[in-house]
Structures are given as C-alpha cells and as structure tokens.
Length: 233
Image (cartoon, rainbow, N blue to C red):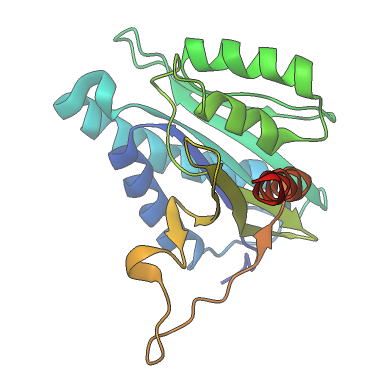
C-alpha cells in the first residue's frame, strides 16, 4: 500500500449511495499502489479514481431509485505531491442528464455549505449571524429549525490532524419542555452514546472516544439557570 493516510468523506443525499461508495473507496485505498514517474500520485489523481467508483454506484442506483439514489461526495485528504490537504467535490446533475462534476473546492480559506436549497438558505443566514469560527453552531441552528424538513439527526464532526482525517464525537445538550432538566448528549455518527442501550453497566464495555465541546458555555449557562431556578423555589 503506497497511500498511508486517512481521508475524509462527507456525503450529502442518498444514504444507500454514500455507504456503497464509502465501502468501495475504503477497500480500494487499502490496496493503492503506483508507478513512480508514471502514475499521477496526487490527491487529484486519487480523487479521479474515487470519481470512477462514485459514478458507477450513482448510475446503478439512479437506474433503480432515480433522484433518491443521488448524492454529493466531498473527499479530502493529504496530497503526497503538493504536500498539503486538498478537497474535491463529486456530484452529478439531477436533471436526468447525469452529467458528472469533479472539481477541487476550498482552494482558499473559507467555508462552504451543501444540501437542499432550503437548508442552504438557512445555513447562510445562520452563518451571517453566528460567524466563521463556530461552524457546529451553524449546523445545529439548521438542524433545529422546524421549517427545514430535509435536515435532521445528530451532529457529526471531523477534522484533519496533521496529515490524517479524524472523526470526533460532539457533546450537545437538550432542555426539557418545562426547562427543569438539562440532558447532555454525546453524539457520534448519529448515535447517542452512554444513553439507553448504550448506557454502561458493571459488566459491559465502555466506549471511549474523544468529544468536541462547542457548546460548553451554553451548557454551563443552562445548568446555572436551572440551579438558580431551584434555589428560588
């Protein structure tokens, strides 16, 4: 294996398509080899290989599921040739032509949003209000908007640590309708760990993971408000 870095994959759209592409890409990258001086051993060259997998899965699923089988794939990873992180977007036109798109994005510092038109509009409005340094606050704002029915679920987060992509859990919180209880949620890939069937017992396993805490100040404020309310009563 010539490529020994962890890439990041983000998918918008069909869950079936995303898992199909993810599994196939993972298998290919485990066995990636190249011929020095001949193979385009750059992140762009790797992305072109991934695009072949993406288009094959997309065409097969579109024949069965039509637009419900479409997705956009964001692929990021360390480029051995340019010695930096590069990110590429894979998609197709959903107008029936299935014209493929494969392009590098985020070539300069900035932020980008993907998703349905209503979610994009909401995300851009939230971003203008919240700012660049709190992207998870922007995502949560869209998820919690009852008018946006195309976005739901727990928060997910990943980032590049040196040359590899790493997935982290996200510490989130909810307040009961009466405001009496603050519930802390440890979300990881859509699961709420340490709750319900994942709650640890004396003989069970403990799932150890690293969690980001973007809402730590809000959680503290909610607890303080609850304690103050309790003291007054």
